[in-house]
Length: 189
Image (cartoon, rainbow, N blue to C red):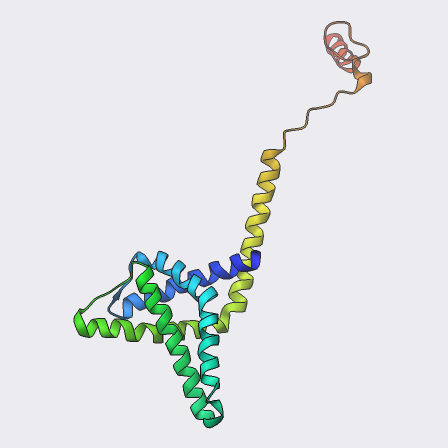
């Protein structure tokens, strides 16, 4: 569970940053919708993207023996771009992101963001181990603090135990022998 939470949250933060960058560089209007769009995109990237990539790669593998190395790299790039395009379309449809700017702006609002997503995914792939290890450390620290708070707040304070021998010398005044001795010494001095 921890692994999925850490991965989801770290990718979510990264996707929100990428979406804000998309909103800044393209006719797509992201704004505050970046939060919800980031959640949608993160879910798509974690759970849907691997299946779509696998499906596209299996279709491309049928003709792989007829391509050169350069041709294979071009096909891989086009597959990644197609997956990024589908993720972008799903994000726009399922979130509050709007593509504005008229007909030409609308065209560029659908064409440029998948390229930015590809660049963002490449950057994330390069730094994901470090990001997830830092996020994991923060998760561990937060759960440790939460568990410590839960233990301290749920446990009742211990009831002080009286020493059974301490009350033997009581004469109805509620004082122990030691307390009586201290009072006697105060009275003498």
